Image 1 (cartoon, rainbow over the protein chains, first blue to last red):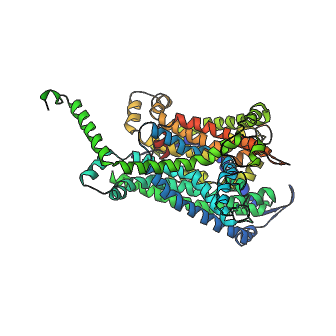
Image 2 (cartoon, rainbow over the protein chains, first blue to last red; image 1 turned 135 degrees about the vertical axis):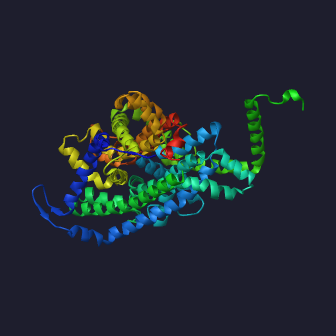
Image 3 (cartoon, rainbow over the protein chains, first blue to last red; image 1 turned 180 degrees about the vertical axis):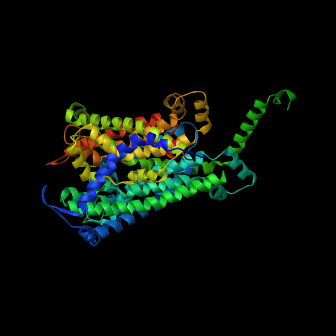
Length: 292
Length: 298
């Protein structure tokens, strides 16, 4: 759509801008302010410059948390994206089955995040949880509070349970928008199932998949409540992700300067990834417009 | 075949073609393959439902039964935990508080996002692309980063421990989301409609309310669903910005951790009750949800 150039459009944006700025710019400035100071109490503070940033970048605990975070995000994307596409392909398309499947598949997305943690905490406990108990009965000494591998596997399983639905629903909506004529043409050509997927369905899905991967990536980067409730970051710090390290530092230990510097680094990483995705989406839309 | 059964009108021809097409399609999708499909779908649904079933199971058992041994269904069926939650004001106020700030946030977000999304979908102006990217970055902003500044900001302006504080804080990610989704839906409405309305003498506000908003009503419904979803599930900011007056259900749930261990039954019952509003909401938008999840961009 060719848009009209008109700067009066700013008036339409203004209320939104003021509100978002109130919730985004002022707090961000506070963070920037803290990150360059050493705050003792309300009246005593020293300017420290980039010292906190240097300290944070060299902190081995935080470097470990960053690596852990990337490992986690990439693992869940590698599982959830193919699984979500698969679910979308087998979801029923008509009748009461379609409605029921939609509601059930959407359900995990609407559960508050700390409740998701509680559900899995109850589900995986060795004494009262179905999964923990079954695994023990089968002879595997499953214990998420002492075995890091179990803790990791459980958190990944929980995230797959929680968020695969999002990818599945996105792809489902992408698939529904393919006109029947495409499939008819494919049938006339006697295209194989794989060819239909590769040349008709997948190209239609790229648009929604980019949105899905973007949403999943950033949400997995902010993951806090679920592992906090389920494992508390343990055993040791094996499931302490970025958000949790940050919250512990800012609220628990009241280290304002370092945690502010850390916040900014954290935010910059997310910003960089977002920018890459955003550019990708914009380029794709440009291609689409050219094609149309 | 007798001539009387031949179709006479174009509709009849089309109907017959559709019936024949369906028959062919059903034949083509051989029975075993269809059953494998259903089996896989069923397996996934079981995977989704099993942890929730376990929560439900726990919520109907007394704590003695929970800790006494593993039972696959409640043997001594009890609603004591639900009764406790629904009669104790410190418990049920948690739900009321949560729903209050979620509704406030939905109202605020949609009202300011509608004109903004219209501007993004119809006009070019100085800095539009950068502004849109900046909005998206707020969608990505981790709540943990803003935790402390928010606390201080809302404390300073005297909004701490009010529903408004949480509703405003959730605007951080909900307004950008609303603008993003609505912009997708609005771009699907041809611009000729705006132009025709203006030629017919509609003023902008009248056109917007009378013509444009009804045209994207399903988009607005879907947007409201997403606003509900993200405001309802976010609890880190909500519990930081409140203490007793506007405490969300998440903070109330921490009460179940007592000196004598965790009150599993009540925790499970409270958890079950947080799932219900979501199911109610999703039931209403089930027919639009597929389109909505692609943010109007399929």
